[in-house]
Structure formats: structure tokens, C-alpha cells
Image (cartoon, rainbow, N blue to C red):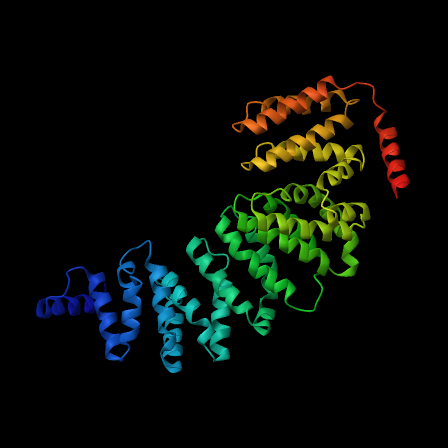
Length: 401
């Protein structure tokens, strides 16, 4: 502590028998000041939520600062803005330890500030800290930006941050990604301007890996944003986005079977948008009729190169933590194996993968893998060559139509 504060604290301890711990003394001082301002209701509200105790812990300090700020919404506007202006001066100091708690307070009173110049200054401050190495600062800034986005006029000011926000989607921190996705969604979609082609391409590449994220919330938000993006991309960009949308078909198909019902519903919604985007009417009809396994047959009948790619992707889903995903992967690989009898190496890879699944922790999965493997190994070997098989499938579809 500065020497003057240290001297003041020691004199208070001697006269009034205050706690020896300086942090506890600071908490008592804040409570006394609030009472002096006739804000006893704020003191009691923070007390009920155990805010004063959490202020004393390093791990919960910023949360408690935010709680105190939320309870201080009811103080007068001049006082709120005076606090905000003072907190902004803390960011000019060399000591960085003040910045995180100061940001925690600013984020909570952001919506109460009416002076445009003050709000702009805070936005510039948040922008400069978006690339911070501090995880806690990252989270606070994203929460603050999300509050800005609730106002459409303010959301427009964040458009210059689009690329920086997309970079955050590559982070390994699931909580950080979960906070970034709603901000991106607001910035890109809450306006009448179509999404530019370069941004759509970059965003599509960033979102595809998130479909399989461990956090169900991240899966849900990324799938929703992907579906909205392919609808709102500028007309000139649709041709360039086809490859990315095509790559989304299999992951979205798998997540139709996601254990989280909200993710499954979002996958169906986005898959319908993707098939419409790619003009795959047959796919759309099967999805609308709730015939997902007919969809898998359509996926595998698109061509040898596509089938090979889907086989490789499906092998990764055999390692999914979700039983429903592993089951779907086994069934799809069984179908792929029937198409690949003439390709000895690929066929053997499928059989080896299924053999490994016969020892799965789930009895139903191991049984399904064993049954699928037996069918592949014992079914007649003479099938039409792959090219003729595709022709036959196409003729059958035309005949049914």
C-alpha cells in the first residue's frame, strides 16, 4: 500500500480496533461509505448474496466487484458516471492489477451510462483489450461487447472487430468461444447489409470444427450461426461458399442424432438451409419426411471421391463420447462398406475400424459393430462396379419420381 494509506489504516486500527487484515478493513470502509450515502439497501443486497465475503478472495474478487456494480444501478447518474470516469483513469497506470476489477465494474454499469463520449471511450478501451493475454479480461470484454450489441446503433460500431472476433473462435477455451459466438452473430446479422464473401468464407472455416465441440452450447451456437450465414451471404459469394457448405453436410447429419435435443433441432434446421443452398431437392424432401437414413444413402451416392471423404470423417465419429454418434458412425460405415467392395484397401479399413468397435464400453454399440462387420464380410462379393452402381441408383430415383 502507499505509505499514506498504510499510515491511515494503522491509526484507524489503533483507535477503532478494526481488523488487522487490510482487505477486510477496505470492505468495512466501502460499507461505511455506502451507508454514509444512505445506500444501506445496497449494503444489505450485497450481504444477502455473500458479496462482501467473496470480495476478499482472489478467485472471486472480480465476480464480487461486478455484483457490487449491479447493485449500485440505483445510485444517481452523476455518481455512476463519476465512478466510470475514475475507473478509466486506472487503465492509464502502469500497475495492471487495477484493470481487471475496473473492467468488471464498467461492464455492469455500461447500460446505465448516457453520455455518448463516455460510452465511446469505454468501447475503445474494450477494443484495445480484446487481444489481451489475460483470460479474465477477455471474458469481461466479450460480455461488455455483447451488451453494446443489444443496441442496434451501437452494434454497428463493432463491425470493424469482425476479424478479431473470428480469430477468437480458434481458441481452445470453450467458455471464450461461447461468449464470442453471440457477439459475432449480433454484429453480422442484426443489420440489413449482406455478409461479405471473404468474411463468410473465413467464418465458415472457423465454424465447421465447432460443430463437434465438447460443449453443447458451443455446438448449438455455431450451427445456428452457420445456418444464418449461408442465408445472409451476399449473392455474389454463394458460388464461392459451396465447398464449405458441402463440407458441413456430414457433420450436420451426425448431429441430427446429438444427445442434446436443442443441438439436434438446430442441425435439422441448418441442414435444410444447406440442402436448399446447394439445390439438393431430394435431400430436402427426405429431411422433411424425417427419413434420415435415406439421407445417408443419398450422401454416399454422390460419387467415389465424396464417399471416401465421408468414410474418413465417419472414422473420427467412432471416437465420439456420445453413444448416439458412435452408433450413427457404425451404420454409415456399414453402408459405405457396401459401396466400397471393389476398393480392397478402403473396404479393409472400414472392417478394421468396425472390429475395433466390438470392444466398445456400450454393449449395444459393440453388438451393432459386430453385426455390421458380419454382414459386410458374409454378403455376396459380386456387386456392380461403383460407377454403374451410381448409375443404377440414379435411374431408380428417376423411376420413383
